[in-house]
Each structure stands twice: as C-alpha cells, then as structure tokens.
Amino acid sequence: MALNQCQQSSKTAHIHALRDYFYLIGSTITNRQLRDYLSFSSSSSATRILQSLNLTSSGVNKGRVYRLNFDE
Image: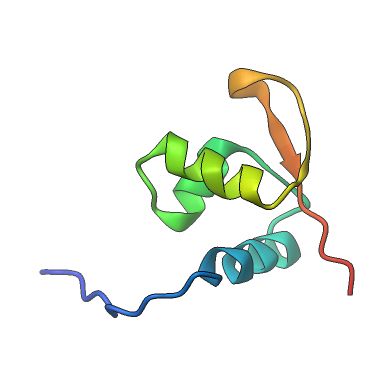
C-alpha cells in the first residue's frame, strides 16, 4: 500500500507543526525528536530548521535541547 502525498508546499509548515508539538507534547525538543515528529531523515535539515527559529538551547552536540516558546 503506497502512502499518498499531498504535493503541497509551504515555507512555514514547520512552524505550525512545532506549535502543535509545543501544545500537545512539550516545551522542549531535540533534533532527534523533531526528525521523528516531522518524519525527516536528515539531521542537518532538522538543525537548520531549529537554528532558523532562534530558539534558546542548552547542551552540546547530541545533548542539545531547544526550548519552544509560543507566547500568545
């Protein structure tokens, strides 16, 4: 059985997905958790997404944790 793909493109879909993650799962996320959540295989793509959002982080390398903050 093949998976259907919507073929839609959005430059902000990752922000909406991270907001959902924040409300449903928690206020911190690692590179691995982001890849699992968004079904990415590339750790460098996940790093670029997390760094582009200018999130507060702690730890180094595989121990780095990013703090999600969606105040509204």
